[in-house]
Length: 321
Image (cartoon, rainbow, N blue to C red; front, side, top):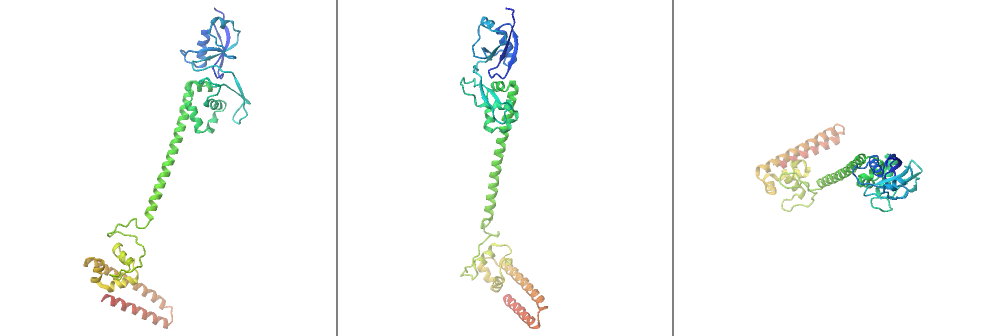
């Protein structure tokens, strides 16, 4: 047959439609594959677009009127009638939208990704408002069917899916980084809290130890427990003791303090020398303050201050003996 027939061809989503002139049914399938983006060797079935009648016979094909619309289906697709759903959502550009049922599972219900694909087809920026679950649904959709639904070439649909997957991966990395940062901050906070607790750095020996205020008196030595702990555990203990404690230590002498502290004579003598020097320094400070006060006080008050200073000197002299 040499008569040419004008007809139309579309894919199963009806999103692609082309007019062409063919010589035969096989010619329709060959040209239709090329126009609709099918593989040249992919098996296809031609059906009438309006009712799904399968066209397999060349004679029947020739009996059909001109401008008949055919639908080409691959082996996973089936014909379904047009279902018109009123639009009405803000992201739609038209008042109504033509949707078809999913042909992959041969059921009347649309695939989960179908409505999402229609949103993108109407407005590509709607991807911004989609949830991660919606994006994952599009990534998992069959590439060829997604391309057909979007009216894209399969390569372009594949690139879209890869881009969406990168977006999902980046969001997951950001979520994991945030969780790691939170764990790190909690660990630092816990470490700082442990450092602030008393006694955490106390290991005995000559290192500084944090001790509570012990007011109980050691019966063997006559010193308060706090005083003994400061003498044994603190560096420069003379700067941490009260003036009364310093006077008591100096008064006891080297031999007595050697027994109290269980130290050797050299170390004990060095401690008493440091305590005596600290006591002298404090008395000098007191004398300096009293000297300043005496310059602004009447004679009676000045004499009283001088007597108290002399009493302090006598007390220090007695302790040194």
